Length: 323
Image (cartoon, rainbow, N blue to C red; front, side):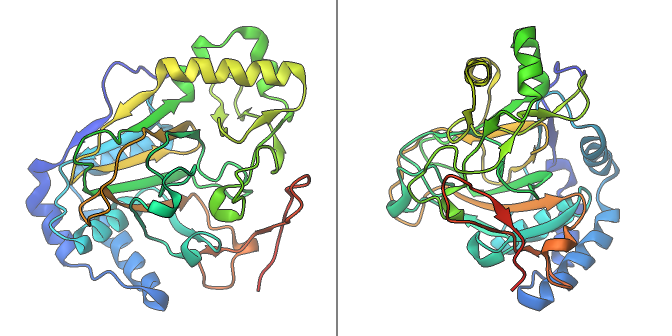
């Protein structure tokens, strides 16, 4: 496993001139023109500073011991700069993707507090802790990376992002739990934004918590919505929760920070905070990446995944529905 001695932070203030020029050369577009914008950004990303390109390459290939990479002091002079920066960084890591049920398939999301959802397990929640989870844990096409660009920090500095890497988690788990965690004896829940408005637990697909290389596994979990299907599974997921609380890394995002989360090797959440709903609350731009576009569930030429989910809470099955 990789060493966790050094915090995974890249200071980008020294790259401002280069980054500002690259951002200025790009014009964020929506709708059908967004593909042109992403293509231009991917090509322009070849001109990112060498040290930044190297850090992104290493993170894409191997991850790190913390499950995230924090690009500090990016030049977000405007919303346009944040979108251009997301496109440049994302272009080095994978392919941008949207989900039909999430903000109508948009590739870039505004994440701000919503009073109607302030106590929900949702990105728009605030007054309750957002429990640790793999983004789209229930989905057959979950993101490989989650990007969060901070345009405005929480003024009280309460809303820190929590990240737990599987590489820090595993050493704290008793050996007896590991074989169980590799078995499909857990059922997760469908996300709030995908129709689970009652936040019902265990109404999604059956899966394992760990998968892949037994010596360096991937992680998928939702510590709010996932349940064990037998006593050993329930004991194992409880052990994961206890261990996660010991190795959770709190990342306080400031304006200009761009956080890249390894969604295959880490779970993330957010501390509770108190919004004012006055137009000056915490504001993030979010985007999802995949390693390869899931063309089976996308319309030709699109980046929107259209997998739909049954309403049967007991089955929680997914089905392909290209409409």
